[in-house]
Length: 146
Image (tube, rainbow, N blue to C red; front, top):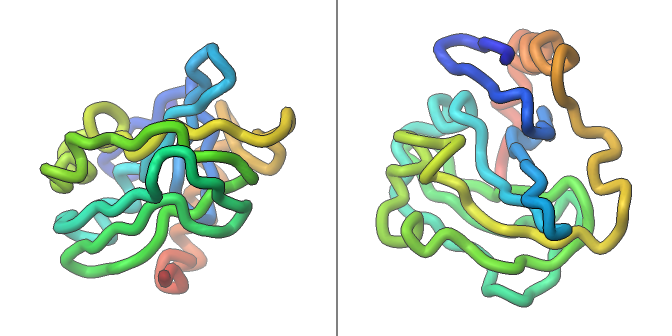
């Protein structure tokens, strides 16, 4: 498990460092996705969570959910093409879960990738810590917008 700042990053996930989104395979061809706790610390308290409707397609680099926070308003951008299978309705009602439990109850969506190889370019395991540190040092988070 990588530790970055005050946050532990589980080894069972794939991370899109630039967009600060994690993915975990669910075993049925779908993936659970959410923002990293580091991104939520930088964004401030989550105030509004608005996912795309279930059944809607999304594309690589485009949004599958929008989030309004105290310090940032922006998009959860996908690392691949796919379809939104479901969203976390509990998060719609209580967006602060993104801050309180980003790797647990604060998950955002269940996604179905269009193709195998959805994990191309994503980081996992021992590669995560140096990539996250480089992202922080470059202050790449300052370039995040909707």
